[in-house]
Image 1 (cartoon, helix red, strand yellow):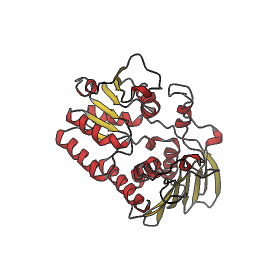
Image 2 (cartoon, rainbow, N blue to C red):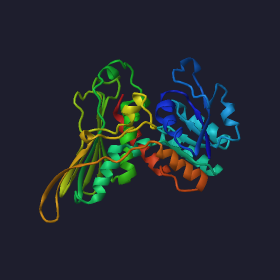
Image 3 (cartoon, one colour):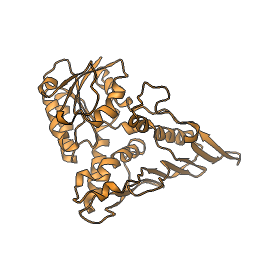
Image 4 (cartoon, rainbow, N blue to C red):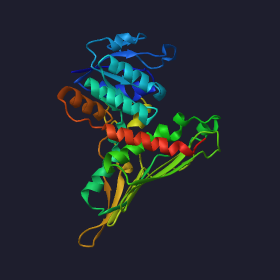
Length: 338
């Protein structure tokens, strides 16, 4: 059994963490620290202890893992406190405010023989897992281009922001998803081209980014905007022998927003209308076009990985160098915004 406590009782804990940890028999959620109890809006679970005293988590000998789900400007503080008290730590993304902070935390954890890792749950998005399955089938041939799109039509969000903040930018908030997917599968790129914009002008929110990652003949692009009335496909892949297009995003978040939980039948599962389309020429020169049944997504697999690392000493599923590279890319990409 892995016993855990949460620092933070907001949307992140209650929407993207608890629904998955509460479904796992090998994980026990013991305590949640309520940093802002006046803002509590989420339903409490009777078997979980809620507290406003941080020491009740830090000094509890039964708690092995502390999960930090607060805003990322406090991630360093709480991760350091948890390590001070000999706890393993899982930290929401973006992991830290800077590469320097992240290096300090990783080094400190190593010195103390503890596990600290970033919560990159989007590695277990259905659309990403399905795209990997198609690539690994070999039907596309040598890869030439991959596109990952994460679009919204929410102009009211950037329009209400009147002051630029580097760390509350669109890229820090959403690029953390797709940048990590690229790094986790394709590795470190030879070169990155950045196009990071403030469509409403300087002094306003970063509301658009388009990054190209180069791997020899392969280009992998991630693109996001707040001003896309019609979303681009979630994934587009082109190879020498074919293409794969997946329009619909992973549906876990969609269901969680409707308070439909992972224990419900069909949670996060794509219907046939959500399946991607694979088009290719086979080794005999025959043309094929077919739907690809989507893989099952499961954000909780990050916790399964943490369990195996802490309890059995297995290698971390999200490597330190991957998290550091992601933060370096975020820092470099934001340099042009003011």
